[in-house]
Length: 84
Ligand SMILES: [Zn+2]
Image (cartoon, rainbow, N blue to C red; front, side, top):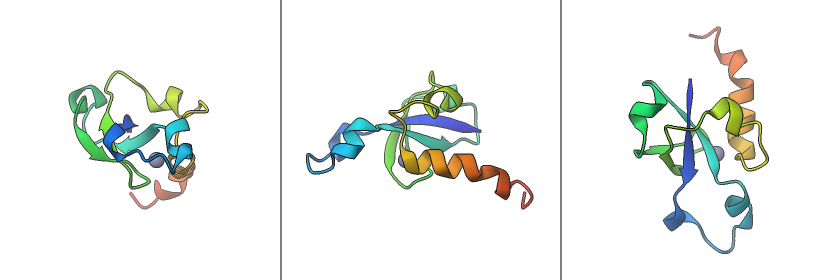
């Protein structure tokens, strides 16, 4: 299960416009995303994000504003399922 995290504004830098355009990241959630709402977590790509518990990664991850690295990692998650 993945929660949705929003890149923290204080981590943005003007030299990285890609991050401004793709502020949504996936956060591996071991609890319901709504319980993580507002918490600062590490996204699966390593970015520091703040969880938006009301968003769903299944929906946000399909959009253009989602982090490409997170999209790739979560899309490849099927390969990891046999390990668990
Ligand atoms: Zn990401």
